[in-house]
Amino acid sequence: MNTTTNANLFSRLFDGLDDPNRLAIEQLDGSRISYGDLIARAGQMANVLVERGVRPGDRVAAQTEKSVSALVLYLATVRAGGVYLPLNTAYTLNELEYFITDAEPSLVVCDPAKLDGIKAIAAKVETLDASGKGSLTEAADKAAKEFATVPRANNDLAAILYTSGTTGRSKGAMLSHDNLASNSYSLVDYWRFTDKDVLIHALPIYHTHGLFVASNVTLFARASMIFLPKFDPDAILKLMARATVMMGVPTFYTRLLQNPGLNKDATKHMRLFISGSAPLLADTHREWSARTGHAVLERYGMTETNMNTSNPYDGDRVPGAVGFALPGVTVRVTDPETGKELARETIGMIEVKGPNVFQGYWRMPEKTKSEFRGDGFFITGDLGKIDDKGYVHILGRGKDLVISGGFNVYPKEIESEIDAMPGVIESAVIGVPHADFGEGVTAVLVCSKGADVSEASVLKALDGRLAKFKMPKRVFVVDELPRNAMGKVQKNILRDTYKDIYAK
Image 1 (cartoon, one colour):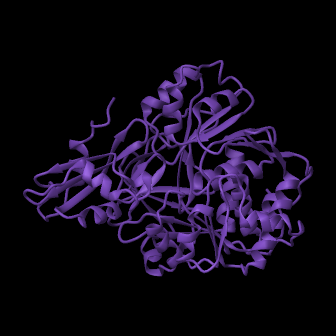
Image 2 (cartoon, helix red, strand yellow):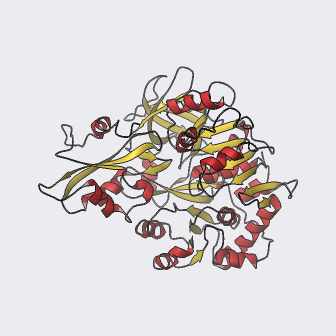
Image 3 (tube, one colour):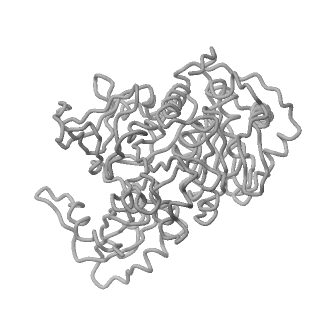
């Protein structure tokens, strides 16, 4: 483990680098970026951030397409003592206004095409396009490469990631330098990463998986990554001949399985396939093993906690299970009402505790307090069990959260948009099994008699109001929604009713 005295994540990542010429990033066009280059670029961009008024503790919000420059922006923000706030590129201006108003970033970085809209809701704006060019990099190219990394304490914030909640709007999960560093150290060791590894990086970098797991783990190990702008099954299949690790969401694996070129010979150079962000269907796990000879390693994490559990590197990677608690992390299953710990094989609420667990929700002290037990365990909202062998199984979510394609979708936000449409009385949004996306967002609604509301009209009305990943894949109009004796909509019945609509 790095023993640097500065707890800043940047210092932990790069202090003690023995060879600045070591390859860090390779792109599809063949361009190569060394660790020394990466540090220098982060220094240039950190100087620009400070010139633009970013001070330690200030938020820097970024809604940018994936590029090396976007990754450098994350590193530069942390290096300057700022708090990085990545935002999904699919968010509309309607959605962005909430995040910017809530987080009050001192600087927002966006795609040049969105500059005019962002300027109306943010005080300071810089641009960065999909190729990594924009006003931010223009300024950075002229800046000094030297920058004194700002000292930070373990519990100082490094990032805020917005996550869906049980009520109201999204909540900002506050992650410290130590939350991110401790989890990365643990994963490097648990997944046996070394400086010989080459990661296929096809994930977006605006959420935990692509930014903090894939990128941080690679850099901590002094490994290298092949940085893809997006998921491309054909390109990935070719890259496997010289890569060693791939991290992906279940959709990656289902799409790759559709490629006839996927076989044991194509994957013989790879040592590890990791899946997360959504449940991997057991059938997908088994089919992947049969086709490639590799058992996918599934793990379990959250925006608020980074990674909590992982199937073992050595030993059985059980389909449908997410493995054991990572070193330093404690996982327990409790009675949701009383908090009493339950016996093995008993379904209850999953709770976690460890250095990976976040500092709380941004400007929501009461919400933060309600999500933690008195002994420091975080109540995840996920229902599951620990089996007799100690494997953790995720069996459902008490919060009705939908995870589609690795992205969190909060039903209430979509329901509010649908309910506001003329002719709609009420709606219920659920997630049901989808082979490609894990769960398909599905809307069920009740309309006024004679109302001219159809699946097509609802989808047209939502277009531009919601990010694409939140859009329902199907819309059904029914006479009434199922309710219990207390009048609450029974989404479990709806999920059962529509469970086969995406079956192939």
